[in-house]
Picture 1: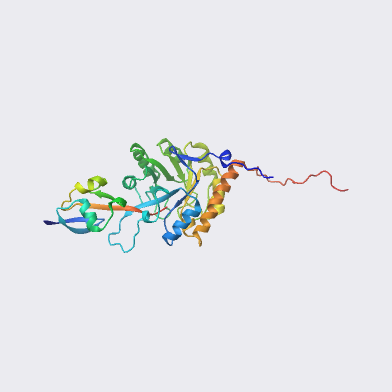
Picture 2 (picture 1 turned 60 degrees about the horizontal axis):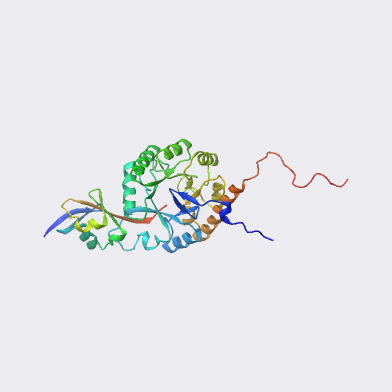
Length: 69
Length: 266
């Protein structure tokens, strides 16, 4: 186990490694069915979230739909 | 005796990229005072297409801000926008994220060129349209009231062109009816007027130009009674469409009496 220093939505975060993107969403309390995840500028499809490992220095974006015109 | 005229005899349904929609009024979901007011306004509008934006999830959430907690994707056709994007690359990134949410391949493409007026960046808009069309998106392009840009967007493969009535959120109404009419006359793809409609008369006069539909947000969100204004807009869109189909009388600079000149008393 080692701590991974990553960036999530522009904020520095530390997560216990090894961890997948799915682990990160669970840690953040997010439902993978209503968010879309970008990992180092690449979109990760839902089925791949559980098999995509996080590495030190990774940048993750988690987005969803909000009200807009 | 009244004679019922079926709606279908008067008008064909709106079709965008092979998909048929029953309402010509589309509404945004931003800036409402509460989610309850938004949902009530959407219901009253009769809209089928509703727009949503893509934003970062707030990681220290005290309130649930995701729109899907309030809108049923079975009930409404979710049209994601790229609002807030100032370059083609940025808009393309947002469009890809939106499509990954898994609802449809439609995107309301905005590439903004100026922070004060929120007018579109025409170069960026054309570039993003071409790329997104290559990737299989159905692009509904938010543009200005310029015919040549509208023609270029159609050539680039846009599924619909969305010229503004006036700047986003301005409520100034239809500033260039001639421009909008000309765009509608020259394009084959649907023309949906997006932005600037402030009240029901604006919506009605816009539809009277012959366009295929209207998208609005602030006019409902900032009305004192959002659902009441949504109902007014639904009626105004229907009235404007019906008036366009009926064909208005010519404008004249002189009076023409409506009663006979003959048969007057000596």
